[in-house]
Length: 181
Image (cartoon, rainbow, N blue to C red; front, side, top):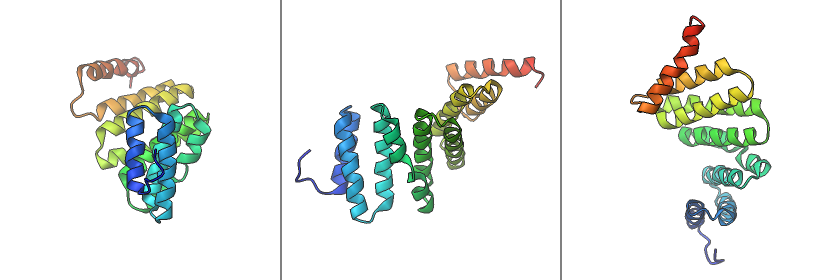
């Protein structure tokens, strides 16, 4: 990255390209610099977006504590500014960071909030992905029936499930049938 690049938008573009090309150390540096540049301009929303993206890269590089630090606060900024899609994404990223740091209850709450926002926005793909993350977390917390219900809700919310998801939906209904539900 050259020192002559000063535009926050250009730094963001470089960070995204580095991430896509799996140059993760470069992406971390560029997202960090872009975040600082957006803050210097007074653009809290874009700075929070860079922080949320930074948390994803930090998780990929097995640095969960730093990822949690980067992700913390971003959802609130997006909610205050009315950016619900960004808030939902940031809550999902926060949930992933909390889970990686071992705060499973905190992660569960972040995933629930993200899933609710995605559902309200009609974003079925991200809603399903978030519900699946929540379901896996519930299994880790020793709540298998709740995890099954969460996964079932995830699958039921799809308008056009594929063959694999239709099969999984049928399989997930079996425990409820055995339990008389």
